[in-house]
Length: 633
Image (spheres, helix red, strand yellow):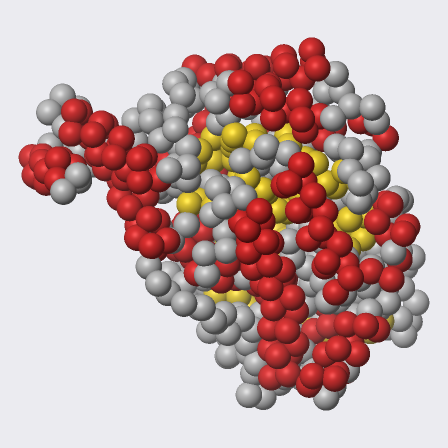
């Protein structure tokens, strides 16, 4: 009965929508219910009370309402702990107690940010691993330090799991926190090197399934079993955190920073966060949707929303570190609102410079907002009441309030539903019925250096080794012809793509800045492992206007010195490339030397993007174990 006036509001607004041309236009700048989170990185946190008060006051003036201070990281705590060593920078001070005191004074919530399975960093393994080196995860090659510069806890180690739970419970018990925010609650990225292959982990799996995981063929059905086994280690940990923390303090809200692409989160990090949502182990999520490219950001936001709908509250992470001006931050906040996100979370306080604070305080955060996950039924009532009051004077605002209320009602309905245990779906791993062999090619030396202009009119190209991309990335027949020519001299390896394209007038070529997402255009994409390690490699991509992207594994800050040019005709396109050996950090190959490589093509002219590859990876291109071999002659 209490919601009868609000049902009337919904009806009035829906009727108004039939007659008002402005009803469904852009979301208005003012929001009355919205999560406005920010990660407070330890490096930016003050070490005395006066500075801390000013620090929190500045965030309050920008109308943030959820603070996530980094309190367990790199194996240290930032606060005094009986279970772990305090970060030396904060010795003699308790920044968490000060943040809670100052934030609660101003009506802001505090959700401590906790690193879970990553507990060491580059040259410092940290106190946890110093005390317990046996807890450390290793990759398939027996290495401990990951390609991303981290040391990780093996999630299968029961003693390590118990310790991490105890550390979290100590934090929650000793401080008046409003929530708990989990980070690195996953495996290290499985590409290019898979984890976890320490002896204990291998022995446990073998005892259950009769095979050492190091012997599993990654393109066999047993790989799915191995994947689910590792996913379950993460899932059960999240479930345990939820159960034991809520037993201590039922009103605490548990959240997690998760990888933005749900399929990639599962396939490369064993992080099945939609499964956590389905089972109500998590109260809200902050997918890390960091991108300097607004189109990429929109794609991530849409995928996140599609994965969980209204079953949880999404406050996507926006990477201030990727933005050159506050304008782009405001644009991404605006799109998040249009996409019916219930808030945003900004990474991070160290990047929140004065121009950003001013832009937020005078723009999208110009007035305070209630937090959606705190007493959501009350928030729905407030939104419907505001919609009822606004419907006659401003249908546009009424529409915005109604949409927010609808999302929260969906969340409330799912939380109230008795869904039981929801099993995980099959992971996004394709097991082919037949595995195609990896091709081989010979690269011949040339005495003529071509002019890199995308024309291929030098005679050396006529005699260069030519290979053909025959398949898609999943092993189906390629729908168009793509030939790749190869040659080398003392200085460079030369690569030319000759791509047939029946829809040449529709070729996509929008990326025009170095290291932009050229692979989202019609483009050539090249993977080079000159060391034959099958775990370390260069990725180079170039579109038909010659815009370059390069990275070493997943480090896009690498900028190689190489030449590229493209031309487009009515029949297709050509891309010509010269890559100096010195830029790759290798010597000129000798006759008989081999490299592991793959040559790929991204075709965007069709409604559904087509990915073509010389050596079929059966998934994404970043599969160095499926790189083919070229031999220099």
